[in-house]
Image (cartoon, rainbow over all chains, first blue to last red; front, side, top):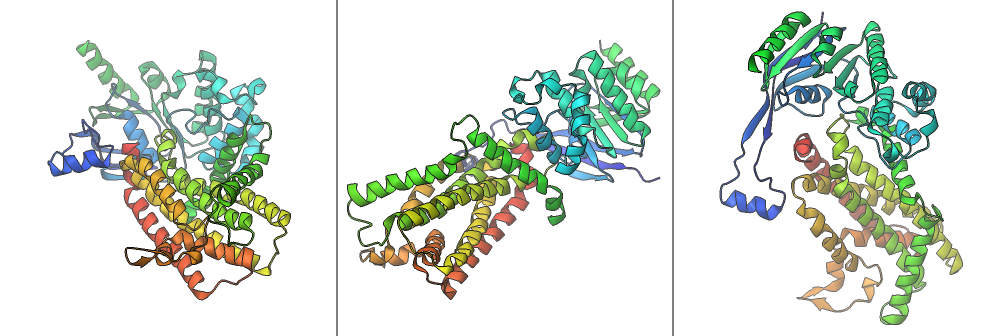
Length: 247
Length: 263
């Protein structure tokens, strides 16, 4: 079977210039003085990963190990410095809930704005509008500007919009940690439903317990390297073992 | 690239409507300002240049309409390019989290400026009716300078948007540049009345180097004076638009993959 996401030897390099040249004068000065070298920082180094259709993939690793960077290269936000990412399908990115919300607009207006950011047509959004509102349980606040919302309420709307369609791939970056426990359960249920319909899910979470419960496979990133990759139990046990060892 | 555009056409529409809604949210007159504002501006300019500084506008028939034609096009250019310039930067939260074709943002700002321009056009028509200016059939040809100016501004906007991501200085210098351009665009004077020269160059020739002069003059000719566009007008307006688009798109495409690392 063809992998739905093929991460082929991907490296992602950031220039950690200690002084970012934000003005032409500084830039020219630095260039003349030959100070234009950057400290290169590899957030990902030679990572290869094949994800098959229907997988529920978990990503684990400490802060700064490159999990979010990997998700962003898959979602097309970053273009890898080296290597190639091939994706065969539509992606619903939940990298941060409510990306593309305008805080001055009302929830109703934001549903349409954010929906079109994700590439839905207004007609489709009209059809699904009630479903989104129902899922987010914010019927009474639809015409309130989003800036008056709590972060949990914003997250609810974001999740509801991103999952109304049946994407081929759902990318979720610690999104479930925002809502209250009832909403978290609801999100998990929705993701399981999508899975049952054949959607491939990639989940980043610091809750190892959640990963163990939900994922079928796990990849473990450490300092930008893919340290381990395989079935949930093996990887999670190894991950937990080192954590206990370090602590 | 076009395929992607088709998919995101609704996004373009929604972004323009967002800008529009936010512009007039919580104002009592709301959208009326779109027409009222250019009218009031015209009044100010007209008062300044026909009475206070009593030197220009004397030999020009129907000075208010003459003024507003120039104003309309120049404001469009100014608004479109300035807004495009910072559009990628201000879309940073979005660009860092989801994949969207990045050119959508400068394009959206140009479209929004065009929407405002259409409202100003209504104001212009009102002034024309009020001052009893004749309507010519060539008014239809006035669309040509307007459309070519749109692409000219879009090209400049794409270039500025890309360059500003790397050098924020451009934001500061651009407003100075457009102010200078304002005075060289023949908005409140008729360059054919100019007889003096600077450094051996006739002032008329210098002004003709400014693309804005061609767009504005083309617009005035067809709208005010009923003269059809001649070959030169067609060529200069078209070539400037094409050149600007080529440079703008080239620059934007070359740098867009690195935007997200700098915003």
